[in-house]
Image 1: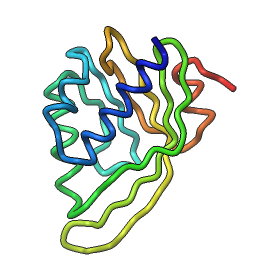
Image 2 (image 1 turned 135 degrees about the vertical axis):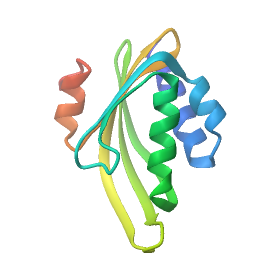
Image 3 (image 1 turned 135 degrees about the horizontal axis):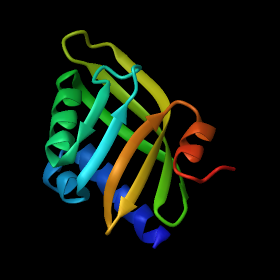
Amino acid sequence: MSQENVEIVKRVLAAGNSGDFETVLALHHPDWEGFIPQEYPVAGTWRGLDGVRGFVEEWLEAWDEFRVEPDEFIHGDDAVVVAVRYWGRGKGSGVEITDRWFYAYMLRDGKIVSWRPWSERAEALKAVGLEE
């Protein structure tokens, strides 16, 4: 199941980058929960498919352009951690940002049931039981 989960995460990242938010929603479990840390402009806990939709809408409101490029996938039975680089151009300001984060996903029934970005690889791995 772990390689299938990697493929699901790849699909959700590609769908997000292309603006295909119906696919993004379809790949998330109705019981989804996302915890977004204070470093993000939309910090807080988001739940359910309405939470997925709300998070994505609020996040994208801040950007004229935004994309996520995965560098590495680390997986276990029901967990995937992705090292990502992202790039964005702020709405109105035109300021460009780049950063590296580690996205920790848990999956159930072939869908993403939780997601959290971490600034440190070890923290992301530990959060989903994939300690190095």
